[in-house]
Image 1 (cartoon, helix red, strand yellow):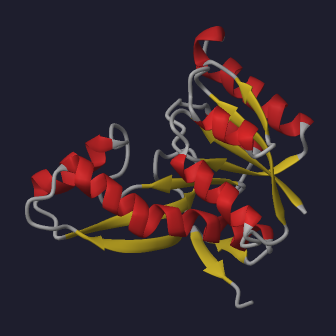
Image 2: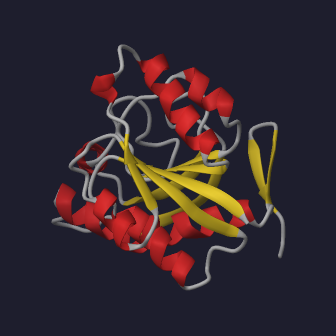
Length: 209
């Protein structure tokens, strides 16, 4: 079984879907080992504790710079033999040292169809505001490996979601979570833990079961 570490900053709805998927046996060959929050008041910590998962806080403000904060994250994950890192609403910037420590072993879920509406500044509601301002008819979610480029890592899974007339950013955000994010993330985690993902020349290949 591969140990999974989940990094969170807020409410932890994506974390809850991972917990639910693990309990339902939908994450094959993987176990949620630790949840690390960047904020002490993140409700995701309560979700982890309720599920019996170790929950710790590493606050960015306790470290002088991004690299030292990243080293603390790396140390905490390595102490627990974490082999897959999942960013589930983790809004704190990490350094390149963090990416180098876990090459093609960090997954992120992004609330748009990358490479559209991705990169610096595109997070949370800002993504959905941009989608609506552009008049896009389709949006969705992407799970990708994390590399040194913000939202630029190899794409693992994507799912499209309809943009409807009269949508607000909040309404669209909820639909994207329910119809795409919450489905894709547990599946991508399971695919990784099953050893079914390979990366060649920046392209992710999924092996048949």
